[in-house]
Image 1 (cartoon, helix red, strand yellow):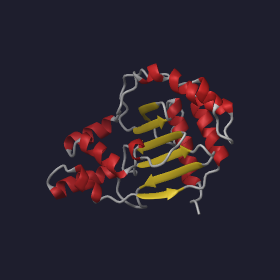
Image 2: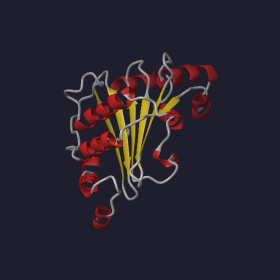
Image 3: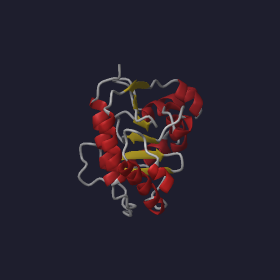
Image 4: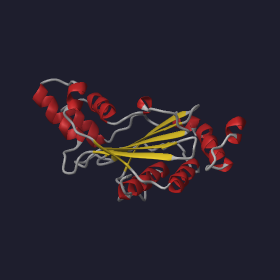
Length: 228
């Protein structure tokens, strides 16, 4: 840890690295109590009646890049996945910080007006007559765009993440119409995974601190200009 704290990129200060790495170790035990993956009651009921939740999850992993598919070196990588419980489309944001201080932000989403991935999975399963995640994923279109994000803004988001109070949520009640928020955070030596259920972006008051942070990032990225 000490060596990692000393070796910092030119544009990212020592306190930035200490905060992120310190956070990674401090929340490890709490993460053992967080369900992975987590789904809302509506999603569980929906997939019991049609395609299985396992097929849906596999299709999502085929459509949206995962940490395992990352190309090139990075210091920190965040994969933020948003799964609405309604007909709104699923989306994912990937943030990578490089050793030279640069930042790469990519937003993945469905085309405007397209049905949600969950709805398309159900429809394509009926059309194909089987639950073949690979074949289903080939029929679903996902758009991606690089975002012209200011490195200083992204570093501020990462500092906010490092300072979150990431206590494991211990409530046992199940929301009827909730979103699922999934986050994977990775460095060269750590990988942390979170999956939480909560209200949508417009109803953040009672959401877990991590969900509120993810929704702030989502709003910033969706409003940012495409990278030229």
